Length: 192
Image (cartoon, helix red, strand yellow):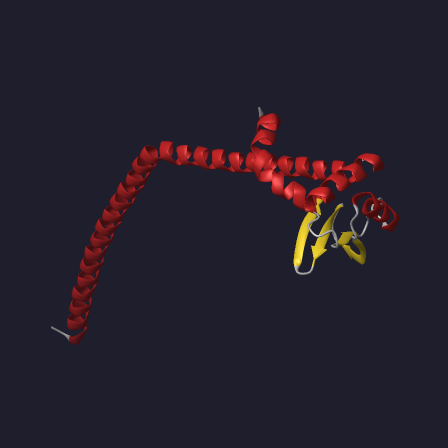
């Protein structure tokens, strides 16, 4: 055999081996693809089956969350309305006609005065309680209450000061003090 024949034979055998290896690799790739396709289909099937089982629960949970959100909004609105109701009561006290306003203040003072020598503090926007009114009150009740020049951030009413003791008869405090007691009735009237 000549050198060319040997080269041709080696080349032919090498090409045959390459074709055999390529065929084997193609078979393996086909087998891996077949297995991976089967796994993908199994996973997809598993997820579809799982989703179909869990779908009703997912929707049930969404309904629960939506219901909770709606209840939360409703509660917020109710709380706002209750707050507005008590703010309205505070405005009503503040806007009382002068005679009723002063009559109410007089009744509160009669119950709040202890020594008859306390200091009377009123709000910044007080329209009716002034030095002249206090002088008239002192004369009719034989007290010596003094009018403070200090003005408080209250909506109406007064604060009676005796040394370190303060008796708060402001409208804000009165509404705040009675609110826990009457709020259930307000709620009943508003939302029944």
